[in-house]
Amino acid sequence: MANIRQWAKVFACAGVLSSMIGCATTSTHESTGQYVDDSVVTTKVKAALFDELSLKTFNIGVKTYQGVVQLSGFVDTLDQKTRAGDVASRVSGVTDVKNDLIVK
Image 1 (spheres, helix red, strand yellow):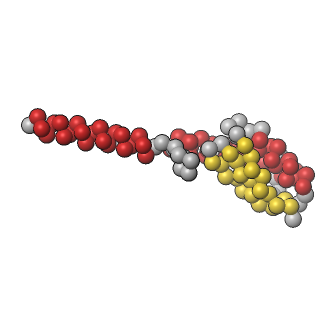
Image 2: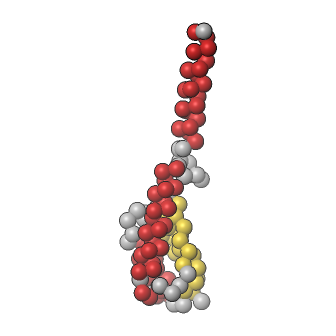
Image 3: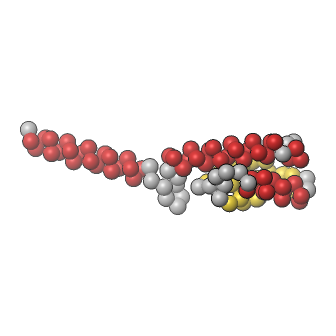
């Protein structure tokens, strides 16, 4: 009976350790918490871009990975591209902006 309890403890510890490793962040994968944080940042950036009247009519894609926001899509002028990057960079939680918008 004592042997069964020892094995149960070993399996329980292994389960806890594997779940902790599975939630850890790496250079190519986000932890669950980081994914949620990035989703919030993405939503805030989209809202900020939508509130900006000069950018409201454009379909600008926003993706966030570990606080770095990537903007994609098309705008009409270089000024609009610059403005979108500025708006995104001012959002709380944004650590950097990759402005991949293309001027038509």
